[in-house]
Amino acid sequence: MVTISLQNKKIKQKNSLEELLTIGKYFRSKFGETIYKVPISISGFTCPNIDGTVAKGGCSFCENDSFSPNLQEKKAKFKLHPSNPSNPYLDRQLRQLEMQFNATKERLGNKFGTKKFIVYFQSFTNTYAPFETLKALYTKALSFENVIGLSIGTRTDCVTDEILDYLADLSKEKEIWIEYGIQSFYDETLEKINRGDTSLNIKKWITKSKEKGLNVCGHLIYGLPNESQEMMFETLRQTIELNIDSIKFHPLYVVKNTLLTNEYKKGRFTPISEELYIDTVVKSIKMLPKNISIQRITAGISDASLLAPLWCKDKHAQIKKIKKALVKEGLRY
Image 1 (cartoon, rainbow, N blue to C red):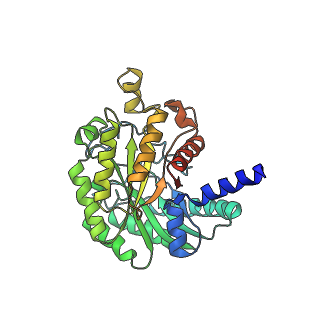
Image 2: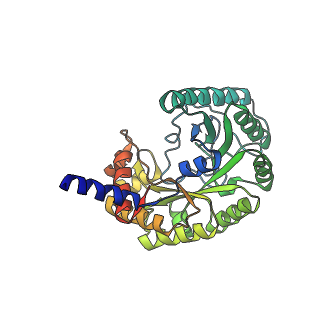
Image 3: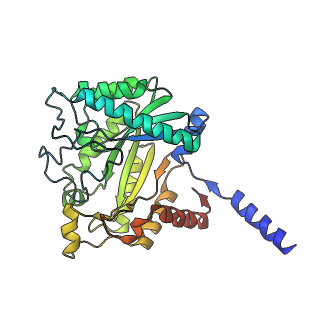
């Protein structure tokens, strides 16, 4: 009798939890089935914060090739730039796109039985290229069987009205998302991490993207240099005010061969603690309006390039801890 009573109590508690809106739930509600994002990394793409257009060296936390899980080919010396319409590598990039998509599609299909996909241009800055190159890549991606849309990772200083108008036109028939790295709305922080962008410009282009009817996902990093928890919450509040549709939370971790590596080794940067990160993410999620979907609650890297904090080595363990903390707040992720 005691065992049955405990089981009933657990079932009742589980049923009483408020379901959070994840991006998976959003897609299932809209399309009636599971949609998977297929991450793509195209060689030749770079960033104005790396090539010297706005800065050199990239953001302080960015080891430029570390965000390229699908990039198998040797890195090309040729780099795209919006001002140079010539792209002798376009055919190679289109083949690369197709090979990566087919390989991931097959793997997801075999593992999960997935039938519908969104092509996610993930690595580097995926609007920082000649317009004709972008159109060729996006059109190719949308031509693949069972692709219902695109998600494009980029920076707010790397979009134009022409690009947004084109994406808005695509969105009339396809699911189109644009993902912006916001990170922080404190200009002193953006300067500290060598971001090469400003809070005013970030707000300007997110506002324009929303005005054109595009779905916007904002990326926030918690644990940036000299930021308090209240500063992180303030960035979140300002992000919410921009009427974004979805959000990703990331902890700042230190990997080898970055500008942040030197700051960490010299004792000038202390990574966010596990306890503070979990507390901040849980409280942030409680601040979100119910219409904003959640795409990521943490991130990490399991290889030898991670210097600190070591708790970022196991992303899945972090997800479990955050989920457990959310349950205590009556929420289920």
